[in-house]
Length: 409
Image (cartoon, rainbow, N blue to C red; front, top):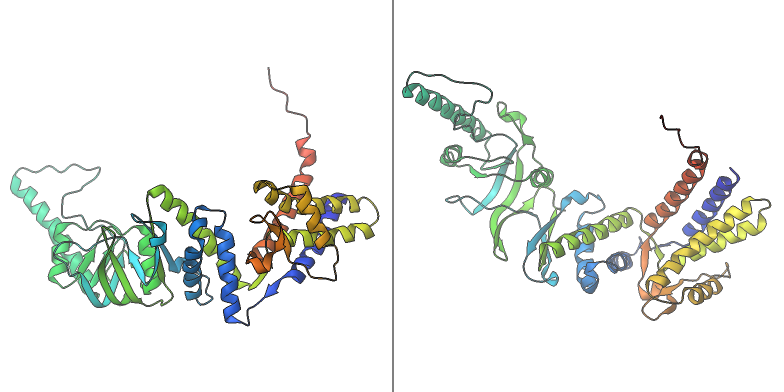
């Protein structure tokens, strides 16, 4: 308990030092946008997108700024399309669905009223599971098929009665229901994946229906324009002027699916960090600077604290200084020399210092001038979560040391 108490006191002091080090430019839109770009570049610097980090940082910041503070990343769609290079990736307003219109359907629909559904539309053939039907003539089989066909026709009439001119279904739509819907002036899109139809419901403001008995109880999605577009060699459907104006799509281009997959994961990380920064606009210098500030504050507390708790605090400060040490070692630099220089730079608590590890020059550098910044909210959560994890490990120490259970002979 003595160690845990020392850790908790050290965490409280470190948190206060972190808050004092934070910079807030929320009142200046231009400075805040520059902060977001710097954070995005810092996040992408260690990933596959590092060579094009300026381009992707702009895409990520523009996408997050469109959310207008809502922080709902579901509004941002990421689509992978092989071909071209990573620099060909772009941000498009609205929602893009990775599907195409069926043959004979209009490729452009204005003022679309969209009915979203997750319902089977393939019962124009006999499908009776777990049962056996015996008939004495082929005419009876024809009667069963006609009944199934009429059932599907009635279902299509109910769908058309909702007043929609575009029907999007998560499941397959067979030829007969497609013909019936088209004759009633309803264009259909089949087999939209579940993630895609969920996002469509979100951005168009519609409901996903499974039954169609109550036309008034279903909310239709709205969109100014639905049209087919070409990206590379593929056809996709773009929804422009959706109900949720902040919705957008980032189309990723690349040489292979492996590159695109890694690019999407990297960009998603940047979007999550930017979302946290928009919610809490405070930022911190990077490059191990905040860890050195917290370590200095914890060392000062340890020097004033009597008893064994001070040893726990010293261990806490040493752990914080391991972050710039690891940064130096990963960059192939002399960690002992650079960390010692950082301790000297941060020795005076009365003077604010933004010095951190500059791996480009191999020396210490001003992190704010170099544009290496981090999100305050993320850094604070790392501190709190790391302290809690250490406490849990210390608490279960007695259980780890229990004698093993004797095996039965």
